[in-house]
Amino acid sequence: MGLMNLLFGKMIDRRIAEYQNDLITKHCDEVQNIYRTMRGWRHDYHNHIQTLLALSGDESKTKEYLLKLNDDLSKVDTVLKTGNVMVDAILNSKLSLIYSKNIRTNAKAVVPENLKISEIDLCVIIGNLLDNAMEACLRQTEKDDRFIRVFIGVMKDQLYISVSNSVGGEIHKSGKTYVSSKNSATHGFGLMRIDRLAGKYNGYVNRQNEDGVFATEVLLPL
Image (tube, rainbow, N blue to C red; front, side, top):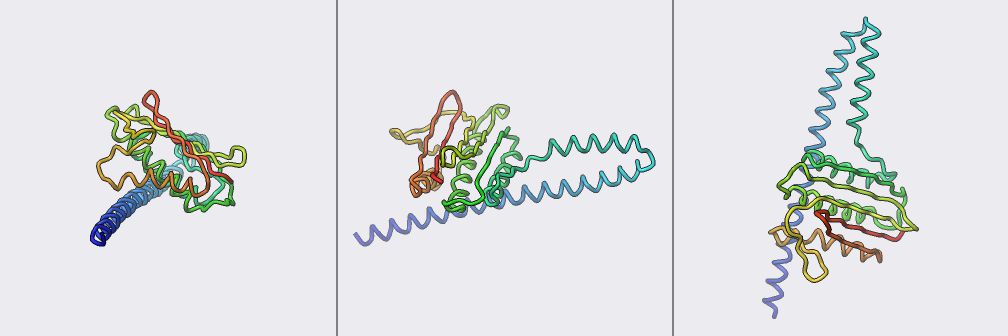
């Protein structure tokens, strides 16, 4: 019995270590993507300054260029401002990575600045939801069909989180429970973490799959 407990404990430790390594890798990918974006902004800013200096003697052309630049910046500005700094950080980090994978996104989010639930737990839930959605999209063979929709808001004294995404292939279920279709046993921790953290706050998790779209809803009492 003691040997079995020891082996089981080592197996759990190994799976947790693999899961943590996977999270660190994802975080590094997200940070690197943000750095690439920042370098691109810096390079473009330098070019715009040079162009404006060259046009400084022609007021009409300078104005025309500035109007075009303003239009371009409006298209590029995809930063979400939810009202909560920590949620802003996780959402924009994940959405930046998703966008870099050429996955169509639509995101709207409003979160109270002060929450009764742990902001760290909330960020873990949101991060896992978006990781699962992105990985499902990347398994699709038809790249043009990939999309992710995110909505976060307050409904009747509860924080409502909805993430829906396109899926390709078969969705796996065990009874009424959805099961991760990824090979590594550690990947199932993402789904379990969402359920356990929602349960910690007496929240509610609902998952549905219909017509090639997988949707997860999470309700957390405020």
